[in-house]
Image 1 (cartoon, one colour):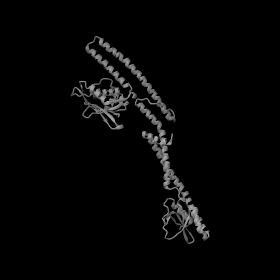
Image 2 (spheres, helix red, strand yellow):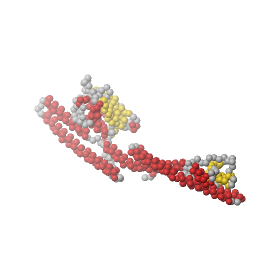
Image 3 (tube, rainbow, N blue to C red):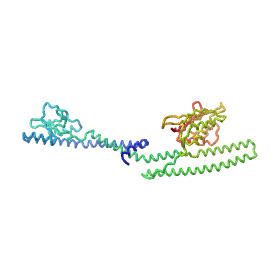
Image 4 (cartoon, one colour):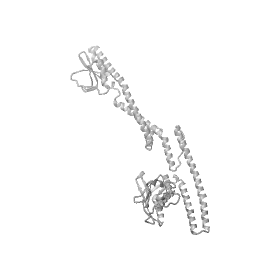
Length: 456
């Protein structure tokens, strides 16, 4: 993998993995920053004394040699010597005048120690300057007899790494360290992100591709266990399909035979209708069990017009004499799902409202159905609300409504069936990635609210 392509890929992965990736990256970044700070501080302390000694020795040597050369050279040769010092060594000698415009010496952390060492060797009257008569440089004074002179060295000869240079190098190293931290974080997080994606696919009803059973022992073992779990779940689903087929055949066939025998038996009309009602209720209970246990495959999802499906369901129910339905349904409420299962969800919610939403004052049930589309672009959602005007449910018992085999008789009146209607609703919506909220309606009654991701 080429390095220029690696960096964008790392940060694209980081955008998707805002949890563990950024925690790992932050910890490594903080560790790197603290290490760099400690390193820079240690180098500064350790290097300070040797650097002061080196610069001081250099200044003392240059001044001493120049002083000796000028002192012991013949007067007629001094001009030539000064020219040679300028040409070959970059050293300039000027006469020290009382009216010279002198700037203070360079302002850095090393200068006080350098001054102390140089004055200890050359004399306490040694002066330092960063500019004399507008000419920048490193200036040091010395005397030959009663005459004073300035010796100017180029700043580059005595300059070590400045604070900005240290900061620049520290920044480069820190940047490389952070890129390394991003790479390490990505390598650590990649197997976990892969496992998370596979788990999400499994939760949505899809069978993920087998995870690679290699790498560090812990990751390999986790992937191996996950793959085994997926195979076991697939086997369970297969066995359940066989059991469901057996239930449908082994129970409904005798029920159909019993119904035929009842029709042919010499029974009173009241007894025949009672037995037929019991057989019909048993068949409905078996149907509820099958609906609850039947898996919803994500591969069967298609573009479904939920608004049209809701209008159709409401129209069918409105034919019943004991129901009054009010609708407010938005157009183009498109979602991704299984049309048959979503139709079952809507039927169950409306049937639940029809059965348990009636008040003592009326002989019919009022049901309000609303469908709206909210948000924009990727945040677009379809919201469906089904509400009745009945007695509602005590707040502490609302959470029990969606559990299998739950029938709140005291709160919702008579109850028929196995208590799986709302559990089927919750199970199907979970597999569709939808959110179901149940709460009491203002003014009385129960409100079911479904929120699904919209298409388009």
